[in-house]
Length: 112
Image (cartoon, rainbow, N blue to C red):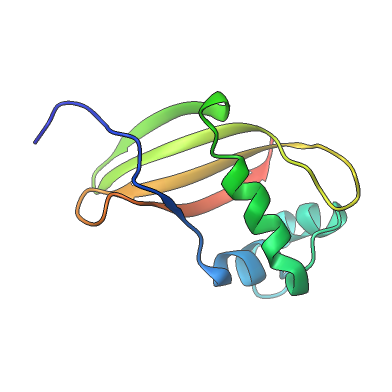
């Protein structure tokens, strides 16, 4: 195994992570849903949040890497553009499994 970590081959977000976990205060995380809904995101337009989370993975927003037992997490910290015109700072975390395609899977995002 190499003693370095390479940048992911890409970034993936499950639709359920958007529409349920981040944008549904009943079935998902109520605090996160309140934050994202309060900034104008909506489950019917989840592609807007998806685009912002992908844009958030820029190298300039990279705040660090944490080695985990089954891979590593990449942490991003920076602003996102929202439908209501604000630019709040968020932290997003993406997991790259040790075994797999080398792609980062969206884990979470929250205000920072």
